[in-house]
Each structure stands twice: as structure tokens, then as C-alpha cells.
Length: 172
Image 1 (cartoon, rainbow, N blue to C red):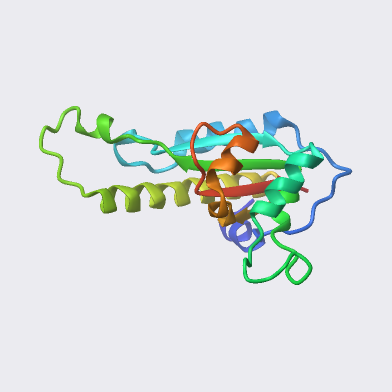
Image 2 (cartoon, rainbow, N blue to C red):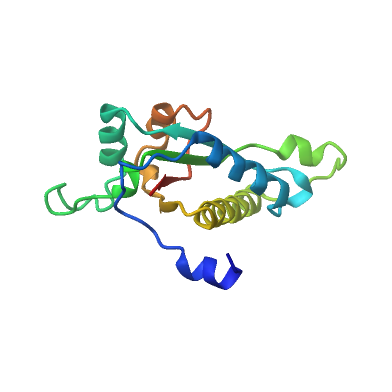
């Protein structure tokens, strides 16, 4: 697909066609493609990516509940983030790479604020590459940052070793 067509066709999806399955290998292929091409400072990759098959109703319900987008409203008033009902969930969280960055630089000048800012920026670029890679294969994605309501529990549900910054639902 041409780049302009690709970025114009990408949307944040909220509904999913459960009658069509996406093979895990297709998503892993996108991960490999992204890993080989995504920009990253000093090749440090300051994030952890977790892929979760969202097929268990209890896990799906809990993710959906945690990621309720408007905490000022009840579930009846605001249906939440149906991105979390997707057949696949990709979790992206931070990976501490300060020790790698400082191994050749005894005078480390970046503040914690700057490290967090740049790591979040790189995580956003990664998510964009992943979503565009999946879109290019005909798969839909929906991103939600509402895992911040309980990032540790979301990490436990999907099996991530780190607390999460955001989640991406993947499906048709």
C-alpha cells in the first residue's frame, strides 16, 4: 500500500469481527519488521512489548473494566474502551536502559524527566510503526492509554513483565 493511502486508512477501531482470526505469526512478523526499522536512540529500545491473545472472557472483561475511559461516569453512562475487547492485545511498557546508556559515559547528564520523555516518545514511535505495519496487512488496531488506571494489574493480565504505558487492540 502507498504510504499516503496507508496513513489515511488507519483509524482507531472500536468494533471487532470475531469470525475472522489473525494468526499470531502475522503479528510477530510485524514486530520483527518494526524492530528492524523503527528509530531508536543508540539502539537501546527503551520499551517492552507484550502480545496477549485476548480470548478468555474474564481477562477481557477485567481489561475492559480497568480501561474504562471516563472515571466520572458509570459503565452504563460511558461504555468504555472497546479496543480492549479485541482478539489480540499488544502492551507497551518502559524498559530501563540507563545502565546501557551510561556504560561508556561516566558523566550522565540526562535528568529523569528527560529520560522519561524520550522513552515515552520512542514508545509512541514504536506504537505508530506497529499500527501502520498491521494496517498495511489489512488488520485493524485501536489504542488506549487508559491502562494507566491500573497499569500493574493490566500488566499481570497480559503477562507483561513491566507496568504498561498503553495497550493496542488488534483484530479485523
